[in-house]
Length: 220
Ligand code: CA
Image (cartoon, rainbow, N blue to C red; front, top):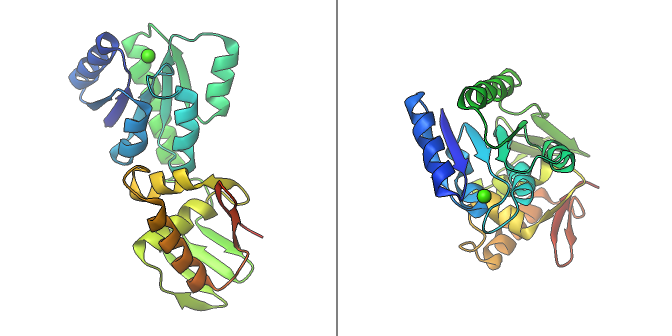
């Protein structure tokens, strides 16, 4: 498996990468939460430290969960119950306190990745229907009132992020991270252009509502 090791401590991080490597995994070391948000797509699993230099790991996890259901095992020195509960509620698949035994970490990684495979790529509904708009996430097709609508790849990716979080506010930053991979590279204007195109093609005003100063929401 390709496993992201998100860990700013070189001692811990290097040891993990080496240990995972000797067990047949390809470990990719990341030092910051933003590295994970940019590079999660190629990963089969994530080992996530909570004390990171650029952001709290729980915050990183929340942002990751908007766009990805990659299995995440938190590995942290924080052993208080509140952190454990927040981590699991925040979308972690498992939680281990440092120092973790390697065999246990490997076993838990196996369990969470197998569970995810059994559930399919995403346990969520593959077809999203809202009024007369049907979004088929597998086929990457959209129909409005029974007629197919041709979206560009970026327009579809924007739509995908929104419809998989129906009724939830999704920030501009989250959209840019998810679709362009980097909110710093993608200028806001680019998002506006694609969002305008998407809305025009759907032809259903109000289906994607604007939350001023924040982002967007799918659903009426
Ligand atoms: Ca740390």
